[in-house]
Image 1 (cartoon, one colour):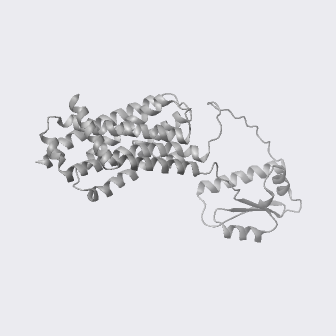
Image 2 (tube, rainbow, N blue to C red; image 1 turned 120 degrees about the horizontal axis):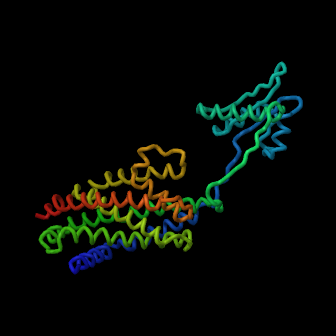
Image 3 (cartoon, rainbow, N blue to C red; image 1 turned 60 degrees about the vertical axis):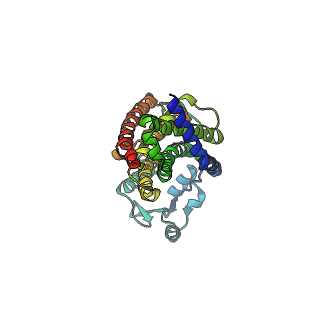
Length: 346
């Protein structure tokens, strides 16, 4: 235990001497400012525009009575074409009666997906049936299986993925930088012949960055969201996430001789690990390969904890998955340090 704490103090000195603490504080301040500056909500404009060419203006009357924005009801097909030309996201719809039959014309700029075309056709059919009374309009009853909670702001929505990736990046990147500093200074040779051992070398680095990442995460949550979270679950989850990524970062760094060699591979891995952000922001896009990326369960479980969504068993399941990842990362790091890193000091 004494050997471990001796190495831990040495790691702290390296961090302090190379200004890692100041850089981390700067990064924390930058992230907090970014979250603060995010808008509370994004204004969603209605991109559908209607022109009712019927004499009775039955479509226009139906839209107005339903509270449809008046500015989205135009007076000619030419107006629709001009609007669609200016913005590709807009869709124009014209209703006219020809030989006693209703005809809808949909105007768009670009290409609609097949499912979008089907949704538009089904929606217009339903709307026309309601207007003409040719079909009984069904009654819908909404039921939620979870307690309702207040809508989240854009800044609140950003907290889980900012928190997840800031936490894992610290240990993953900085442990590698420390390895390259040790190579440059010749410290690896000292570690090889010292009685501390490889196990203490790995533990000192990984536990130090795990603790620093947890402190960083706690400060980020307090400054951007507040104190009302399940701290035990949140810090435990982020702690083991940081431990896994630090061990993985140590493993990867042993195969390179300098930061310049390592950098592009490290960034590529981070980009891969950032793909679950897409599923977080657009839950309908969750292909199987993305769900296998370690950060996928982390980001969704962090969201559950912070906003108290409480999916049953999600926390324990994620902790179990991360525990397996962490054990594998530790074994890989131990083998790489023992067979490659320490031999470089010979």
